[in-house]
Image 1 (tube, rainbow, N blue to C red):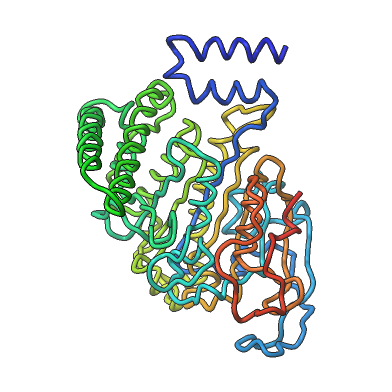
Image 2 (spheres, one colour; image 1 turned 90 degrees about the vertical axis):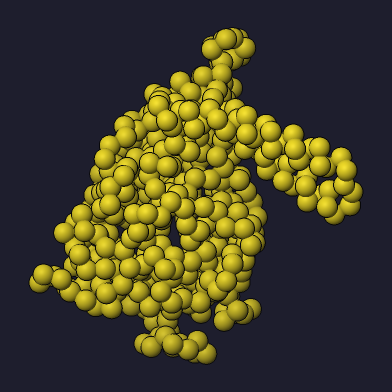
Length: 465
């Protein structure tokens, strides 16, 4: 039966309808041959920190087994040692996380990580996803782009987001392809829609998309002509430009081939795509993220909500909160609600959008299950544990098991900074890469404070299935 299915799919892929069905056919062909479905990751990065207690499951206390702080300064009360691993099935999630309770068996609440290599402050910018210093240009690739490169796709990585300024179209705030090379975060949902689904759109968007190919052809031809008259380093630089134009041209061609698939899966464009209200724009970006994943455009998405300097002053007016998050981070209240209550309301909104994304992926069959079965959604902040972060702790929530590669349905608290067995965000990101098939030993920069007292190689073994 499998051989017959593969032969059928091979024949179809050679037919006239191959171009518009190619992404779906590729998936089916791989599955018919026994290959595992594609894995995919989504990073949801919220600005202004995540206080550990706002994601703590009910009835589970933080590990109170403390050791003296020793030479590690700034840790009053000692450092936690040992691992706390508790199933979530008998515990309710806190208010902020309650929207994903319907998949609690796929949730991991992760406490005890650190990220001192990032430096801390209002935001760790590129360092939050890169596990490197947050000062200046990115010091290397970030985990979302590294996974995107490994997992592949028409767009290896898609960055979407929201800032407090409706006029922003693209910012460079938290993702990077390589050292010194930031990746864009598209903050205008309408323009992001055109970039991702322009080949399937109508009207002006379709005309704008169609006009790009002649331009890209012309630019590539110009570069080739110039290349012939140069030698040495100048020619090498020009070859780099040529590869970039050819990559864009190839991507344009793939989008044309996928037009039918894109039309089927593109989200309806509502007034939320052009709204001045932050919650509307974030809502639209989550819709785009789900559509891009379902369409096979990408296997790696980052959704950045007021993340990175200077975007942490965003206001969530759509939730009835006109006080900016910077002020909330400084303990400001609003209309009788405390800063903690305001933060929880905002965080819960993010998890409502995550829950909707989960349901979107659950609605698409893949292999013996659904797309959600092969997806990992990572929620964390670019500011670690607080508004003025020191990165001693970096709370995170994982939703999904990445095709069974990760253990889920648990509360996992790791030893504190400096204790035996402690892990930082670089170890976490190494875990994600290992689970996706990239077996490197490290990611990002080491924590120089830990020195040689703590082994910083490898992933978080407790997370792997």
